[in-house]
Length: 321
Image (cartoon, rainbow, N blue to C red):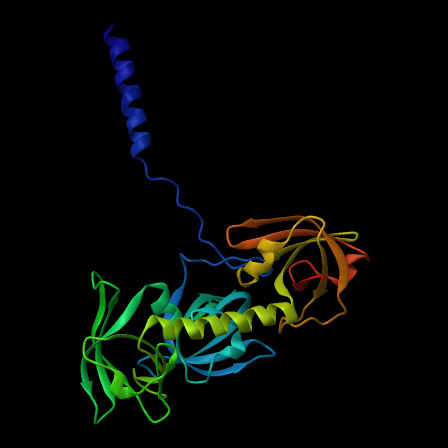
């Protein structure tokens, strides 16, 4: 009997020890060319000022805010380029613009791969945050603000100096306003640029209400939709077999991805490093279409062999009229 009790006791201790043991650590995500992977466990989100960009190679540089350090970046094909609180593309950003650059290590361990640029409007809109105006210096054209969420239950930062100049535009109820329309206690949002040094916010746009920001957001959405219709929804080629091609459409292709249905006619073309089509598109019919998270997965039967495509390369897709 004592031996049996001892056996059960040891078994219980063993089970408890197994339960208390730490779970095996998941392998860290790594970027694999040709796949949509964002290693959120290994990233740096850096406020910076856009210094240069090359639309053909989709590369550029930004100055790390508060320093003189220049960082180079290569925009991955599936990167989220969030401008005016909506999807955009690299050409939508202005030199000097302040934004958050999400960076990852490349194969050589350099922090150059970029998976998003998020402008200030997108960041504040997404987090439901505002600049609350604490003090106004009309002579200098400056505002001292507190950045907080919509009900001030979360305060991100106090004492933020926001500058304006002759080029600054002010918006209220979707129409042009003036610096004089800003009052202490107002909550505003901005689009700002740097001055090439330090940590300075100079406004291109000041939004005195949500209506004005939404007007800019809607305009950007229209630009993006037009671009997708003309240039095609971008995605990676996952698999080729005869005249069949499987594609993962990127997050920015969301509206098109969600509208795809079996039997639908489409055209598809391979694209180069600049994501622009580089061969004549082929016609095809959608055999399968589904959403996996925020990505579109589609299988297409083409009317000609899929030899012009390459697994892991970018393709563009259009819905046939």
